[in-house]
Length: 393
Ligand code: PLP
Image (cartoon, rainbow, N blue to C red; front, side, top):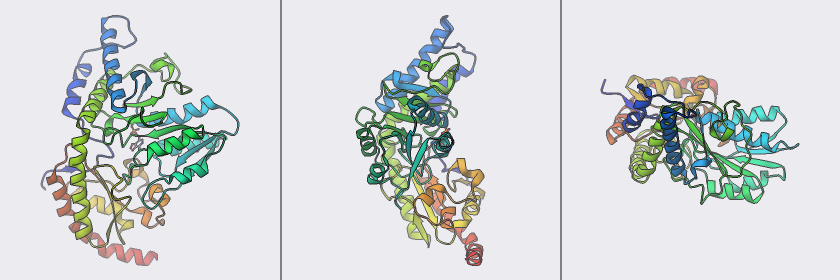
């Protein structure tokens, strides 16, 4: 088998060697708790402060508006639970899109069980939230609107500035899960009226287990972790100094490289999409053709929707790592995707997609490998798939 190819960058990204270099001293002996007053603590505090400035710069935020967390999931939980707990008024209402990541949707389910009214906005066939639907969903009691910047399954970009503006003019706070978008497309909290933004280091070539929540100054948030009062009392726990050193460098590299990287990845992505659509009979693109993340392609194959896992495994056998949806749903891989269903796909078609996501270290040769392997992988599935599909009909 030729070398292995990793095309699942929406699940996680390889740590950039410059990030690893920045983390190394903090993993190999250098120690210090940022809360300690001695020289070791002071050094650790300086590392955390630098990371805070670097992550803030990626969003054009002030450093004190960044709360570090242990993941994007935790940042989403803190945003939703923290805002709704701080609001704590009877009849409080929350609006989310139906294509959010489970970190948001499951938190909504929890809140709904505690008496919060939750509205889920369906999206169009293009995978994009309609601003008029948001307008119609808002109520006087709406405290928070949460709509992701970019979807993890289909890669579509949402009109965040417009949605945030609508929310604010109705008096609701606006949160965006930017875990997939950050470092890939520009996000500017000064020009966009967003109040809370979730980030995760491992989606931008930083380490796993490190995240952040941007909280606009003046937004009331109830902490969800209680303890020593770190992170301005909003997220107690000793800081992950090595992880934050890496997150800071990952954010700085992403900010500096974003424009060039986007052009390169759009070129690779578009060649991949065009070639698959031209050469694989029955193939179709899922989600808007252009309003999508630079390196993100989500493809369907007519009649093979129930065979997404077998297609993934056939490509895996050829050394190519792709996804059949989101990594988080791998345990529920045989179930229809909630994202595709919200886009109007019937439950059968919603079971299958091929997610190919490119990152900093992918090359044109990687795309070529996929393009070579895909028709053969599909050919092995077609006869069985059409048989089982017709039997299911
Ligand atoms: N939000 C989105 C859109 C994601 O894609 C993910 C991870 O896949 C998360 C949140 C969760 O982030 P983390 O893996 O850091 O918990």
